[in-house]
Image (cartoon, rainbow, N blue to C red):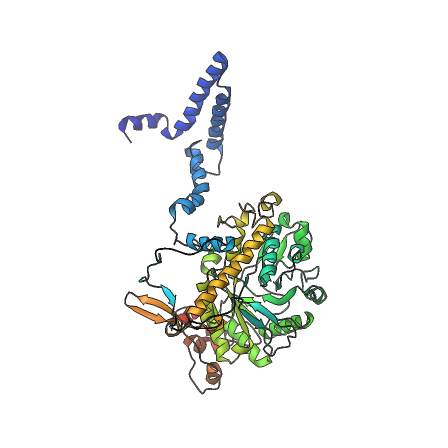
Length: 569
């Protein structure tokens, strides 16, 4: 600062200049207003600035405003518009935060039926660490249809109503998190394309029923839609709702990728009569989702609960969804399956990449296993126990493109779910204001005026086209690989660059377990296939989610994380 300016600042802080200019402007405009009859509005504007400056210096909430009256508000304005400025003018097409412009554009183009081809070659650095591709065949196949299906519930359980599911479906998003128009459009799109729409734990609303699209009914710890007044599970109410022919599968939610191990509260002010009716709770009262279930406390009890849900639903495919955390808890479930002979018809593995549920930052960034590690652990365990052919595997976690589908299939998934992909198809801009109720496109809000911006017939067509065009692209990948169905894609088809001069098949880079390997290790006939099993299998118990033996004392005190260890061996 110049010396003369420093002297002025010593007697009258320069940071008050904007406030001083408001006072000078008011005097000049007031003089013009009194003397010449003009400038009255300017006088009011400058008077407002004077009052604002006075308020800024007296308030106690923002230090910046106390030191920089009037002009300090520019900081908050710039902070408010920063995400939009970054999204539209600064970030590159490849920056993912959490989805890149290129990923979002691909969904927009496919949902609109617009050109989704790219000229002039790839924008990716094919020599960068982590670059992946699928190997093609010199004898590509020809497939008649891209309507790839997988049957769930035909593998020997008590299921009597198997469901022929698409390999690409709408992941769990509740009415309440999404607007009524969003639910209507999603379900109509699912009905047009013959694929499934997961209700989310908010249960089945009246908007899910309008168009008759196939539903996967998710049952969370709040038992919404099938609860007693005290919040406990109601078999009678469940059976009545599950009997609806529109409900094709039942999914018990243990945890979700966005905030595993964390419950939730929908404030009473947001519990509208529509939401209350869907969830079976009082309107205007806080709606609580506990962090854990009350209908069971042990792995064996959970499998019996799943068996009872299957029976109460009339024999519909019943399974559970989870984000992998402690590996011994998943091993406890696997042991319970072996001991009881009770199997879920399917398991959906949710990756920590999941994000449609607003969550504390620590949970968003640092809780739960990513999809690759979680899916591999579940797939490998079932393979090692010779149960993989009897349990279908779904997955969810940033699945957008046909290559994403192919890659997850290579890691063991039978089908993939997508939440944010279909949100983009609805018109989501990734404004990341879902939790505020101020969604600019009417997707994630209960504001009736805002959601009117979402025109259901148009968006339903976009949902259908995104699904169809993505599967058409998957068909082209499958044909190029010389295969006839996505389920034939394995880790031997996907290649990953691990260094500038080195590439590896995923089959050689990631750990895979041979059929029956865990059974052989349990009998003492072979070594444990990987350290995660050697360390934690014997600590798991079918009668409790807690560790066997001395609890925490049994845990190893050093070494890498038990779940990441799976992918590093």
